[in-house]
Length: 203
Image 1 (spheres, rainbow, N blue to C red):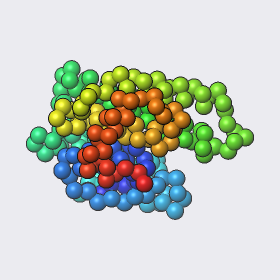
Image 2: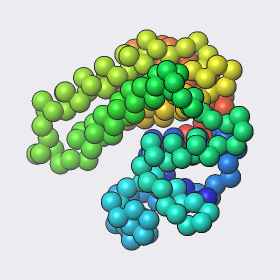
Image 3: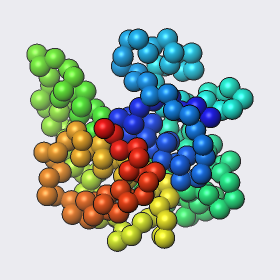
Image 4: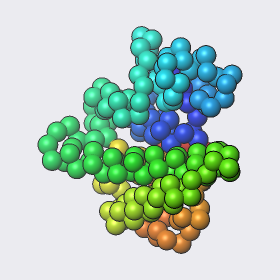
């Protein structure tokens, strides 16, 4: 399989970590969707010009993180599912992942609004609202993060979504997190001891 997208995208990285934890061998093509020279290649697989894209061995392209991870879990090798298959456990896992994902989305919005939009077009009230949403999400995750992993002895899909969110905050919004979230900080240290996480840390 071929994964298109860079680890700087928390969404691409979530797919990459999921594949690694499931023992899947993938080829990487680290293209950023913002670079004009990559547009034609990315649009071959996703006309919406977004990553990640996971191209299956038969050439079928899968798009959007949640849909890709759902397919990976559905087809996971025996014992390698990262989200419970059904019932309340599945519902609760998906809700935790949704919380991490929506917080990640706000972190991405914060980057675009604060760093990439020309200063004359900044909208301070919207930026402040976005930062408040980020804080709300991180505070909720801080209260929920366990002493070990959400998955118990080994990380699962919740751990993957939360670490991708946290590292996005660490890399792009240090002023929002410094010293405020000790449990998430300790969680990140535990996760970085896992090769699938450390090897994909954006550099």
